[in-house]
Image (cartoon, rainbow, N blue to C red; front, side, top):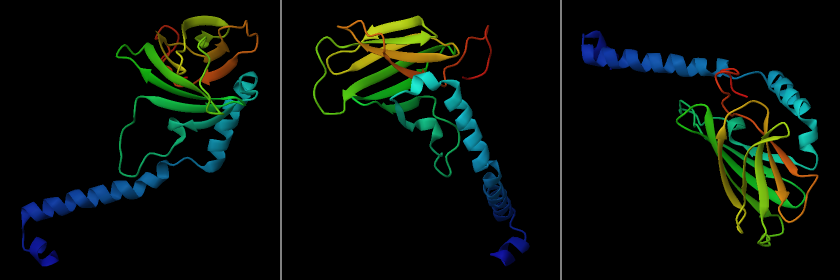
Length: 187
């Protein structure tokens, strides 16, 4: 093959050059992986930011913390979370809307024991601090959907509808686009 290219085949020479460029880019990809100590520091800063929200709560899965499959470029716009409490699993999918200042939250609350949820359901709210931004009620299967304006410092509040629950389950909600009047960064 080397003789063929040296004999002047321009098509094969261009193809070789293309693949050599791809190889050089692939070799350099490892340089973009952040060091482990930097990742630990960033995670600890997030943990310190919302300590009250984490009582009795464990994040089992966050799609943005999973490594991207080798060879895949770009990003998936939706973000998924799976939380665990003493009694429930809470599955959330956060999807941006075409209007960058809006988002949709789709989720399901499941009992850890496998029993069906009460017909009375759960009140589900997206809040900025203690101020509700959007709210709905989960159906008998624990499913819910909310659409809301993006903002910083959002959380999801889940409480039993039939009781005036003063201690709702609070879940931090990261990755919501902030309105351009506040800032253009992601939370």
